[in-house]
Structures are given as structure tokens and as C-alpha cells.
Length: 548
Image (cartoon, rainbow, N blue to C red; front, side, top):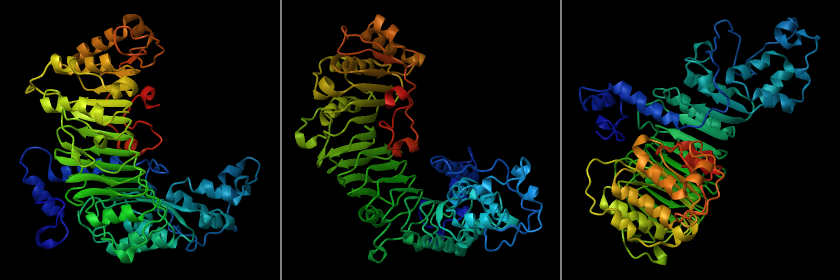
């Protein structure tokens, strides 16, 4: 069964069908429900942290029957009430200093409270009721516990909260509930969010059916600046829906079924869109074809896209790839500002530049180069001949490369017919002569051809400033090589074990120009949030010394 497709009869994929599919994978291993929970928890782990942390303990509303999420429904008054009970902080001098603060500051304070605690401020006084009404609403289903106030299901509690709040809506985060059989509450929620100017929306259906339709009201939320959707069937976009999100800067489609035409429309008709992420998407969209005048970051994260094409993207700076075991072409046609590319898997990705397939040892011409690229991350089996030989070719394709990350994939079998002689016979190039400053090796270099690559980089890297290697005992040969190349005195002054360096070696024994040698905390895995964080110069770095 195609996990992204329809169930039997064309209806939503049900738990029973998913369970049958997972159970068909074998008797041993995790249960179907465990697999489902793992997939969804993995997706949720990629999300940014909530704007307001969830309370440590679930709220108990059993003794608060008069409480409402709305100021209009609450008739609570401070007339005749014990002022100390309403204002515990006033015990000191009998004066309510907090209520004397300006409304704007009070509203800012209220906006930083969990949803229920913020709403409870309406019982303090008539003035606080006005503050709550004017405060941009922040709703997080993690603040509502297993059930909403007075036992209301969370789905309906979120919907009612948004509908009843008289002020604007700043942010809504829903990741803990299922909207199955709650279609009316879902439609009402999206319609109200569109009317109340929601700016930040994270809306996940936990976790099935996989193809539950997302109401078209999502396309009316013109005020959105960030939109993360999870486990939905995204609506088809046609001319009747245009113009689209005029303020949207960041969109993430997590495990969603999205027609190719809808992705193309988002890219073409969101004039401020800067970040697009396709995450754990299986089958739809089938391809990512980037034509956008504003996009700066494109992420293909563990999806099954047939191809990624950067057709016309004058502002694109990053193309981030985390690829499943599926071959696909990566085509770069129009990306004059592309600075970051990776992880480029030399086994799974067929790189094309300007319509030409890049092959190991080819004659690289100007039309097959990307002069703007500064940071490259590659995954390579050095024991596979064609993959290893691609690296010198990539140096010519990216002549101004400044930082290189190499994820060396271990292999027990060796089908490579080259050894140290291959790397010793190579000449230098513009990249190594004038630009490459940082090299990080993720994983261990054990075989002779792997060590030969490191020797080549050190020998020809005339402006090399930093070399990071994994401190694993299995990597001892590579570590010794790096230290020997920089010289013993320089190694001692450069803080090898800590990553802090002040060395000033002249690199007499190699092409290295200065002595920043360290045991980097390298890891081939990097956080999704790093990939889309434009404040990080290098999203692949895990050491501050290299991230600057």
C-alpha cells in the first residue's frame, strides 16, 4: 500500500489500514502503533520551540466552573471580593502596583503567559478584562492539557478560544490532537484565524488519516508570516485563490500530500517567501521546481522527490538536502547567489549544472560552475571509485568554495581501483589555491585512498585555516597526519583537544598557511532548525569556532 495514497475505496487512510500495512512488514520489531508514534514524534521534534513553554502540570479546572476562555462570557467582578485573594502580590503595602502599569506593558506580560493563565486575568478587574481583549491571542494546545476547560475536547476548546477572543490572533500551535471527526471545529478554526489576522500557525493532525483534507480557508489567511502544516492533504491552488499569502516568509509542509501545482503556486505567488521546507513527504509533491523571486532557503528533508530543479531563483542562498535511499537529479540552472549546498550525496544525487551532468574527471567549463558557492557538504563512499573521483571535479565546479564538509560513509568492501597514487598525481586548482579555508571530516578515514584525499587537501590547500577531524580512536591515522602536517610546536599552541586556537605556523611542512588544528565535534547529522536559520553562517557546523 502506498502510505501517502488513499485507502481502500478511495477514502481516508484509516488506522486499521495503516496497522495492516505495518504488520505486513514482519512479525518481529515494533508494533504498528509504535511505528506510527515514532514517525509522528520525529516530525514534531523538528519544530521550533513554543513561544510560551507549557505549564509543568496540567491545569485543573474542576473547581472553576465559572471560568471561560472569553472575556465576554465571564461576569466575574471584583465587587465585594477579597482584594488579597484577587491580588496576592498586594500583601506588602496594600497597593496594586502591577495594575498601575501602562496597558501596553500589561498586554505584553499577558501575552507571555500560557493560554489558560492569560485568560484568567479577566477575573482581576474590569481593566484587566480590557487588557486581555486587546492582547494578541497566543494559543497552544499543550497549555490545555488532555482536555480543555471543563472537559471540552481540545480541538473544540482551541476553536472556541479563537472564535470568542475579541482581539487579534498572534500565534496558534496545535500538535497534540487529531481532527478526525472534528471537521466542523477545524473549518470554524481556520475561518476565524483568517478573519482575525493570524500571523504564526503550526497546525498538525495527530497523526492520521494521512489524506485528511485541509479546508480551503487556509488560503484566506493572508496575514500569515510563518506556516507549518503536518499530516494534511493540501488544497489545490487555482486562479480563484490568488493572490496568496502576501506576508508569508516561512512555510513548512511536513508529511503532507501537496499537488505539484500548489507548490509551484506558493513559490510564484508569495512575494515575500524566503524559506520553503518539504519534510517527510512521500509521493506528493513528486518534484520541487523552484521558480521564485524571493526564496532564500529550500529544504528537501527525508522526502521522496523525483528531482529538485533550481530553475529561476535569483535570491536563493541555500539548498539543503537530507535524502532517503532514493536516487534523484539535483539540477542547478538559475541560482546566481547560491552559497550553501549539502548534503550532496555522491551516490544518490546526480548533479547537473546549467543543463550538464557533472561526472568525475570531466572537463569543467564556465557554464558548469557555480562561482557563488562558499559552503559545500558531501556524503561519499571513498571505497567507491566514481564517488571519490568526483571530489576533485567538484572543486572545479565550485571554484570559490571556502568551507567543505565531508561525511565519509564506512564500507567493508572496496571496489575502488585507485590508491594514494591517484591523489598524489592530482594538480591544484583555483579553489584550493585561493579560497578553501575550512575542512571538516565527519566520520573516520581508514583506507589508503581516504588518507590520500586528506593528504591532497593539506598539500594543495594554500589558504587552509582550519581542519576538523573526528577524535575517534579509529581515526588515529588521520589525526596524526593533520598534527604532523601542521608541525608539533604549532599543534601544541593551537589547543588541539579544546578547539581553541591561536597558532601562527607558517605551514612549512605543507600548504597550510596557519595553525588552527582541532578535534572538532563533528557529526553527519545536523538539526533541521539549523538548516533554515539564516543567522547561522554555516548550518552544517556544530562547533562555534567554525560557525563564525
